[in-house]
Length: 323
Ligand code: ADE
Ligand code: ZN
Image (cartoon, rainbow, N blue to C red; front, side, top):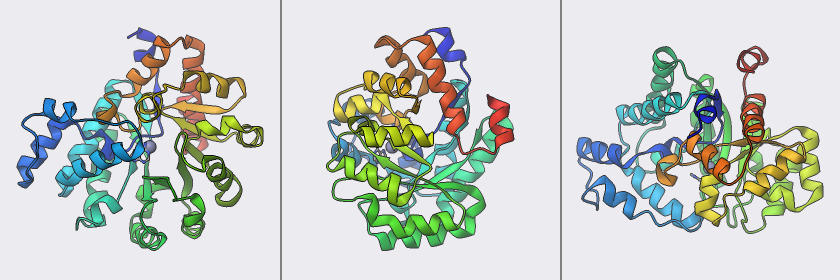
């Protein structure tokens, strides 16, 4: 790993906390909570990872998170990620969490968010890493369920900076959640949505996030490059795009180095992120290293890293502190 990657002060804007669940922690939590795992060892868990598209990844991801039950579990998960990120010189991050993946299993919203929030506070004090939480709705669940989740979040509004939309994109367009996102904005939340790579109807989905939802950022967004009316609008608005190269290599068998370079050439504010680092076996530095191994220059890496601080949902004084 070149020192310049390790030493760069970084921000991460697209990481699912549930996607940071390392197999070793799965085993520890399973034992703590009396959950049976169908594997003998952490190595066997990794050997069973067989992702070739979004649904095949999501099936494994949702099953694995059943070991997360108590507030302490969510604390441990979050603190471990923040510690790892800080060790890689990530100074600021905006992690996602998926409350519906837990409330549907009977884990109360308050349990999930309290554990996460306490870990954020402790990591800020003890490790010097700042973070702001983004709540994602699961797009393969109903708009009513998303609305209930939005309502549940309001008691914890000060702990959440924005809302996002993740899970299986097929037949779940942004427009399905237009009302939920409109209300979220009225409550002061920032808005982002996944526009995953090469999904069915992706161009229409991107059009909707730009024109109808009016997002503050786009997660992934690689397919904006296919249409000039999409990429020119993203560039004109200075919208951030949270690209996840190693995740892309798993989900669409393409690290998307050329696409990321093209975004920079077009003046789009692309950023690099890990998405689900425990599953894709790559945190921030490994994502940046993969791009360097694929020919990306030091200047490009520096620009991508700077972009992340520029499009972070920080007040101006905090942003200036990092830039
Ligand atoms: N949830 C966790 N990771 C995801 C991804 N890459 N796309 C959609 N939903 C997700
Ligand atoms: Zn994601």
